Length: 274
Image 1 (cartoon, rainbow, N blue to C red):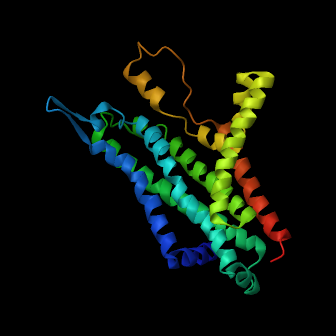
Image 2: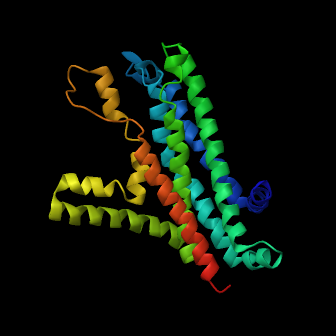
């Protein structure tokens, strides 16, 4: 596995565009943490510091940072589809196979690289959230600090699942721009399915069906935290239940899609005449 990851890292780091995108994809998520230090002056009357609002308290900080950081995954998605596009445009895929790399190892090298970068991104966000939380949180008990760290697992799986989808689209169309366009098409397609099922069986059934679709299932791993913040701040005004937890069945759905995308990527390469 290390040999395959090292092979991919050499290719990526030799490409200037890939280096820039990787740097951006790791740096931008930390803008979420930088928000904690922002002070907003309202015409000199008072100053509002976002960190003082309680949104960086434990354990809610795990939810908030992973939710917002996940929106920056598109930058590394470009790297993933470029890994495939460059292999075809530069003819390196054929050379790798001639040099003894099997088609299975070729796909696994891409997947292992995805897992590596997803894990690294998760560790960085986890450490950043931990230290920001220690600074702002009024809770110092270990049981509270490490409660809900399952959001980090959800963040990791969300990245792996999404990048595996990008890997599949990259293998399918062999062009970076087209692969990214397919992501948008899939997003529209999922909403079309939602509308069709709504018309046929009602909205409740439609949402249940949509939760099994690729992009929606990845999104559902980390639900939006806004309603939770309102419930925390104004419990007497927000009178509704909101299930924001990370559920095992949501993890299973995303793992299933991830395995399918990697398998389909392998089948495409295996059956393709290079």
